[in-house]
Length: 139
Image 1 (cartoon, rainbow, N blue to C red):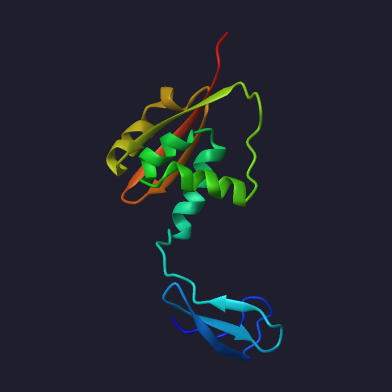
Image 2: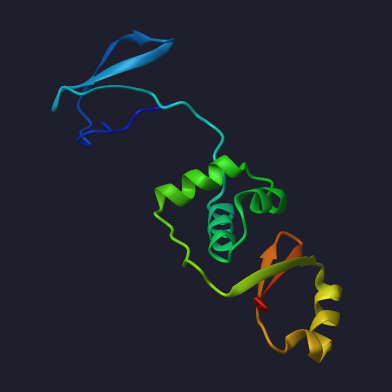
């Protein structure tokens, strides 16, 4: 991987300064900061990060989101912490969700009983759709 700028001060003035853990180490001439080349790791597409955070805000648990998107619940927890996402406390609505294809979704909306008494959100998940419906808790 090619280094373009110092990660500390964004200067392009740096020199080689040894090898650490089989990776080239550099020293910035401007600020004296030592740095190495970042490892290329597995990066999850921003689309899935946004979907995971949306689903979290809709009230789904980390494990439910993991099963739906196929992304580790630990990654989702880290994103929630990183972006400081907060859910409202003590809501009297409960989300239920279904995964439907396009034909099933159109049949679902043709039935007017499915649309009364609750809010509905439809979001895309690859070639399918997730339908989230909020229903009020009954005492």
